[in-house]
Length: 332
Ligand code: QUE
Image (cartoon, rainbow, N blue to C red; front, side, top):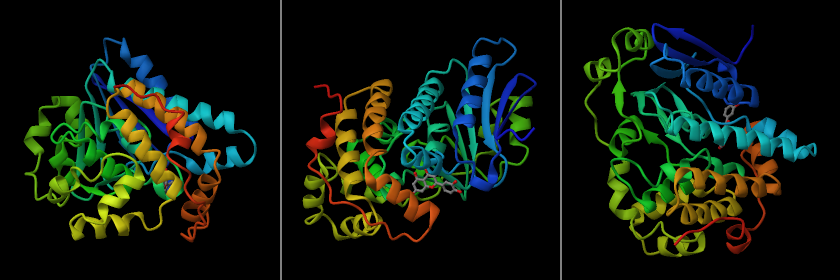
């Protein structure tokens, strides 16, 4: 009845509709299970030739249900929270290896877990007003849902430094930024009727309705981040002192409210995952996420940003990078 994810088959297209608009479609455990079940069912169903995921309401998806995750940890059910993240990450991997076209249609907010269900597919179609961000550093968590890998391997600008910049700052990519990096494949004026048209006519309609790419602000930072956003957060932080002032000031502004521990942890994660594949990267996210969710900054960050909305988090001092490095797998 009140299912937060609706699924249907239209012609030969499996359609997944995120339908919890009051919570900006943030993904709870039930939603992760419903999406995973639909993908399972359609994987070997010859009547389903492709999958589309979209949302009811203006916003695609604001992330994972981190409030519920915080409640779980605070109430002593951290293992349940671990299981939720493990299932979400398994679904992210399923999407990346899906044997049929997987297309996300997104407008408005695409954050955190919303990228996890859109950025690993074959097509990501965004409207002019869409923006994408990984803002976990402001809630004491890490760049997860496979984005610690994806952001370093963007199709049109693969770069560990760019990925680390995006992961540590929560920079909001505009639709044109998404096109410039290849995170998005198409920009359109409106998503109205697009599910039906793709289902009836195929993905070729996307090339018919796609808008020309505009200027990307992020592209203006591609060169500046190289050589700066590499290594541990203390190293990056030090290099920013002698980086171009436009970059240094932007990073200062975007990380002003960040958890110092999350910056240290996410930079270690990015280094470890720079030479790993998506499956291994997700495993590192899972291991590090289990550490982070139990540290006080996660409960405090979710309180300040999402529950009280006071943005007055009292974060702990950051530990040495080794505190997080020790749970991560490295290669090379
Ligand atoms: C970091 C996050 C999330 C966030 C903000 C951050 C996140 C998330 C939401 C969110 C936003 C609006 C809602 C909601 C959740 O915000 O994961 O239910 O109505 O889900 O800085 O990781």
